[in-house]
Amino acid sequence: MLEHSMLYPRMTAARRAVSLDGMWKFRLDEKSEGEAAGWVDGLPGMERIPVPASFQDFYTSKDVREYAGDLWYERELFIPGEWEGKKVFVRFGSATHRAQVYVNGVKVAEHEGGFLPFCADVTDVVRYNAVNRLVVKVNNELNVANIPCGTTVTLSNGKKMTKPYFDFFNYSGLHRSVHLVALPMESVFDLDLTYEIEGTNAWVSYRVATTGEHAVQLSLLDEEGRQAAYAEGKEGVLEVKDARLWQVRDAYLYRLVIQIVDEDEVLDEYVQEIGIRTVEVKGKDILINGKPVYLKGFGKHEDSDVVGRGFNIGVMKRDFELMKWIGANSFRTSHYPYSEEVYQMADREGFLIIDEVPAVGLFESMMNFMEASTGKTTAFFEKETTPALLAAHLMALEEMIVRDKNHPSVIMWSLLNEPETTSDAAVPYFKEVFDRARILDPQKRPRTFALVMNSLPGTCKCYPFSDVIALNRYYGWYVKGGYEIDDAMEAFRREMEAWKALELNRPFIFTEYGADTLVSEHKLPSVMWSQEYQEEYLCLTHAVFDSYDFIRGELIWNFADFQTTEGIMRVNGNKKGVFTRQRQPKSVAYLLRRRWKELPVDYKG
Ligand code: EVA
Image (cartoon, rainbow, N blue to C red):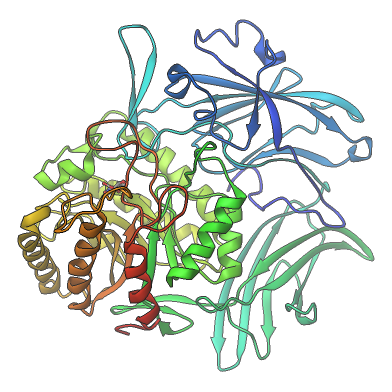
């Protein structure tokens, strides 16, 4: 059980939540002198940067952009006097990749892992009705004892540099909103929900965890604010007559109002939007509310100009509009859990999410996507650091599932991206991770992981753990691109025949397929990197998808061009976007739109 509640901060009659977003003091710690120099009591200098944002792309110096090490943030914290007697927390949406938090010079929290929220309990440390000082030390180095994996090297000039084992820029800092939160002494801590639907009625089984023993009351309100169900007790069932279901791209959200009561007094109130729907894998079908669904959509990134991986509410809105325009119904949060606001929006818009824990780079290479196609194996899970890695992985998994389990949009957990799966040592590691996901999720949603190119029917020891087999495949790009593309498609079909021969009776989805494409390049006849080639590649790949009834989803790589580490493989970033980084369409967007608008939601079902 986590130490602090993962519930999203909300204002209600009993709760307070104040955004701390804005300009914060900022300082890089090139000489690792911060602690010794007393920075926990306040930073030297006057430099300020926005929160939330990555720090890297604001500045004009390469040493700043590529900086690896500690970075410090500071801001004032005014705590209202009327909060005395409440529990007071500072809640970080995330701090990439690890952080230590100080209030008035006292350490109040530390957290490992860069993509999930954590709280600092500051109740006894703050001065009330007064200004306090909040200092955060963030560190962005990579290693193989934490996720995502990579290394940190020291260059001959003494500067540190991170080398990710993954294909996205190591953006870091305070990427998400920070809130100051006041809760009553006795408060709602956690909520589990499961659904049963029969005919026009639904049963919402719930379990509320609180920090005390007083009675709990729940009422479920429909979108008009009318009460649709009521229940008492920490555990029970809400019976909803004529329930409006949450459907794919046709969402309906109820509001669940949870109160802790002491006779007539309301001690705490928390409000959670919920969608009534079921998720199940049966044979080759992915079922939402008992009906098969074919996934059409994207692997995405949180990535945009200037703010990097910082949450950008405008970009989020644009992304959803583009996904609606193109006829998508789903996306994977590759390669880490996204900002909570993204899931709230997906709940509202009826999108399906494959929620991915940041377990990426569990394959020793900067270009695993390339090297795996050569058959390279690395026995990643036999290192001294593997137990520590597993512990960090399980912790992130718990934080993700507890954070996201009540979003109707979340229909599947992705537990790793492109790990090494060909050695025996991978198997016990996978077992722990998959078992833990099953225990943590009250809804027992399907679990998956994305298979890299060398994870094949004959080599992969871990696919049996997956409820849905998810393939990342680049036939026609990393494998036999250009004029050899027909051979690539033959190899692709051979692989699919080998999967078919296993008769797994499970759904397969593609969590990646794509081709780098420069928006500036047109060429007749096509060459690799031209917009024409991206279209040809897609037509041929889709023809393969269409020939197998067990393929139940296509999430193209990537929604938009995104920043990566520089190198000979990347032209100022990965250019496999269907949209540019500025969210304008490449030619291929129109092709996809034609296809996806035509495919029925229950295609092949
Ligand atoms: C690519 N391929 O090569 C992508 C990567 C991604 O960006 C992969 O999962 O296999 C990875 O992160 O474009």
